[in-house]
View 1: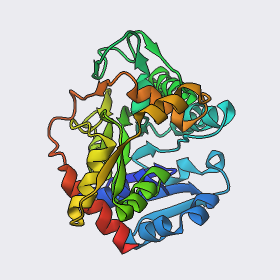
View 2: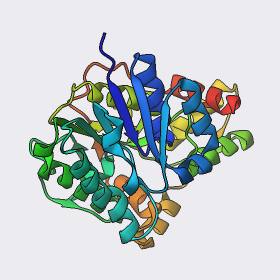
View 3: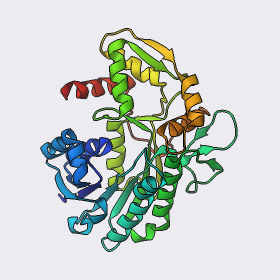
Length: 318
């Protein structure tokens, strides 16, 4: 049996640790290419990766990583940022990706770009909408109210323009990721809210995906299942944030109350700068668009209550 070497560029994070768990459960070899600062910033994730048996290759900068020397068969590009100005977002989503593709050219590996559902922008017009993967890359009339949206789209275009340099490629666009290892602020706040039994009710669904479902989609992409395609990795449920919150309450046997917050989110989102995560969140939700997939067909999506159970078990464990 031939073991495939999977290299996770920027893998010491929420998505990276879930992906590493999935790949290693499939018997694959995993190497993490990361900055020294990321290991120091996320010691729990670093410890988990080591306990899984993942190799960790460290440099002071992602720009100086010896990617060629790792000899990977599949590379996953994971760097991304929700905050910072144009320079920081261009570096993470566009310029570094261009550099990585150039470095990998002699190897002709498969490259999986972990993008974002935000790269689709917001379709122009009014009313509700359903947004599937395009017949042509990013075809259609779109707006990009947030810099995160705009630079993620530019990063995808970099990959499409340089696809000839690679042995295979795919673009996976996660929605809002929820589940084990969800250290982001929104999930920490929800966890605190469960203790008070009062949670937010948006009155509209969010394009979300369970972290372990996303890991399965990415691992499949590494096997070539989605070669040559872009994939919307979004749970078809599109729950309200209240549904996620209330599922955690049910798992814990608690009765919780929802407080409407969309008015406040909309008010802040309209005036937030293009660099703000609030601008991104508001822009994705304001038209009630459902971001759906036609390409992910053989995945048993994890039920919401099981997602909550998985997240809470992880939270209890740390």
